[in-house]
Length: 202
Image (tube, rainbow, N blue to C red; front, side, top):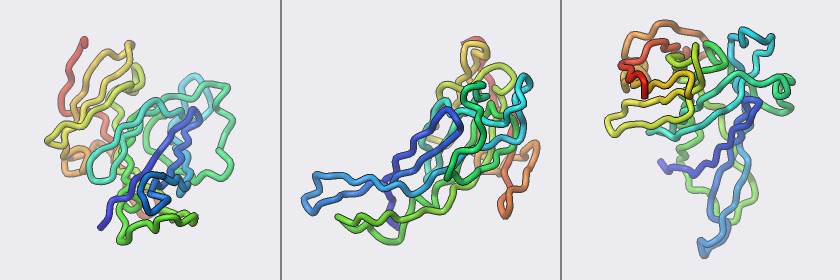
């Protein structure tokens, strides 16, 4: 399989736009960007101070095996206008403030090389929500994330949270016993509420 190059951008309304990147000329000096997906994360739980169920993207971090970690927070009133026109909805378990592990492997890997100079985008299937981490949700949004060489995952909360939380690879892969499951069509998302370890007062 060939790994595609993807560019993914998030916005303040929970939107995720995906572009496939490939060489647009035979000399390999020019890049072409073709949009292959437009999605909107929609949490199942609204903000306690707002009836809006929208979320905003805070930060993102690429992970191994074509996965992407996305930190979200409650959308502000000015950014809670509802669904994004043309976006495919991605329902997520848990609150708007959480970290979601999205599996883009079906988009990231291709059996064929992109054709140089092609102007036809290769549409990608929507990513699946592999799991949602809510260890920071009651205090502040996650503002930095890092995957360790062994596959474990670190999340750092904002100043109202001030903790580093370590999530094991088994938790991300669903091998550890999760606290809750949520069915999403033909896929079961995992809701993990407790990290493997917590480092307080960072």
